Length: 432
Image 1 (cartoon, one colour):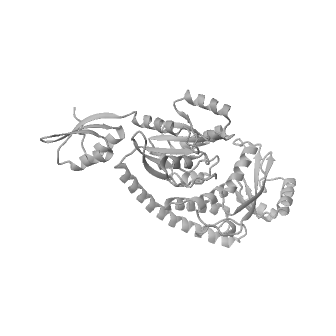
Image 2 (tube, rainbow, N blue to C red; image 1 turned 180 degrees about the horizontal axis):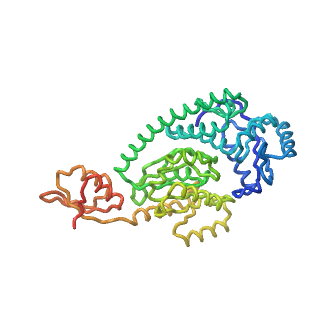
Image 3 (spheres, helix red, strand yellow; image 1 turned 90 degrees about the horizontal axis):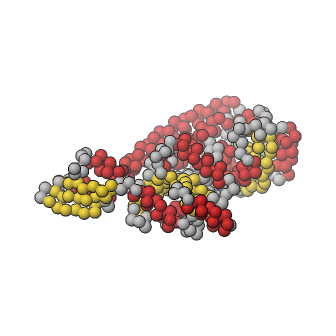
C-alpha cells in the first residue's frame, strides 16, 4: 500500500436510480456497493449517501431543479468537498453540477479508475491503469485535481480551464499515451518471455476469479501461506499474484489470484486489464469464488460469468463454484446450501476464514487435474540428456530402465505435459 499523508476528502455518495435504464441495478444494494467503493479509496471520509429515484436523466445536469436544490443544501450543510455519483456522468453534466453545487464530481468510472490507480502494484498494472485513466480524462476536458492526485504523479479531475488550455492538455495527454504504449509494449514482451519460460515447467494453472470482496485473497493465503493483501475492501487485489504450490495429493500447481470483478466495470478497464487477466485465459481450471452470504450473490455471479465470457474463456475450461463465507450464514441456511453442493459436482461450500471445506476443495481440484492422466512408455537415447532432465523436473517419471542404446521410461503425465515435451524436443518419443 502507498502512504497518503493528506487531509481526508469529505465525500458524499449519490446513486441515481434511473427507472428508464434497461440495465438498472436495484437501488439499495447498488447504493451500498457504491459506498463500499468510496470506502476503498484512501483519504476519503464518506459523510453520507443518498438514493435518488430518477424517471430519466436530464441531459444538462442529470437531476431536476428541485432535487438539485435539495442536494445543494445537503452538501453545503455537511461541508462536502466531493460528490461521488454512482453512474455515468457526461463531461457537460460534470461541469454543470460542479458549478451548481460548488463541489468536485467523480462518476463511477472515475472512482473505479482512482481505486485501480491506488492499488496497481506491478509495472504492467500501473501502465495499464495510467493509460485507462488518461483516456478517460481526455473525454473530461478537465485539469488536475490535487485532492485525489496520486502520489506517483497521476492526474485527478477538476473543471475550469480555458479552451486553449484544454487543447494543450489534450496534446499532452496524447503524447503521454504514446509514451505509455511504448513502455507497455516492452513490459508485455518481457511478460511473454516469462510465460514462455513458465511453459517449460507447465504445471497446471488454477485461477481464482470472483466478484470483488468475495474472499479470493483470503483463500489464496490459506492455500499458499502467502501474504497477499486480504482486506474487507473492494478491489484489494489488482494484479494477479501467482504461487507455485504442491497440493496434499502431490500435484504441483500454479495458483493465480486475480482482480475482483464488478458490475458495470468501465470498458476502458476491461480492455486495459485483459493482459493482467491472461492467466485466467491460460487456466486449466477456474475456481469461481462467491460470497454466498451476500444478498446479491446471484447477481454478482452473473456479472462474473459475463466478464469471463467477454474475455473469451473456453467452455472447455473446467470451472468449480466455491461458495465462500458459509461461516457468516445461520446454521439452517448453511445446511441447505451444503445439501445443494452435495448434489452438484461443480459446487463446494467453504470458509476461507475458518478453513472449513478446504480439504474437499483441494481434493476436488486434484481430481479434475489428474482426470486426464496418461500412462506412456517411451525410449530416449542417452544423447538426449535435456529431454531426460525435463521429464524428471516434471515429476512424471515412474520408472526408468537403462538399456544399451538409451533408457526406457514409464511415465504418468497429462496431455499438456506430453504436448509440451513433443514440442520442446521435436519428436514423438512414445513407443508403439
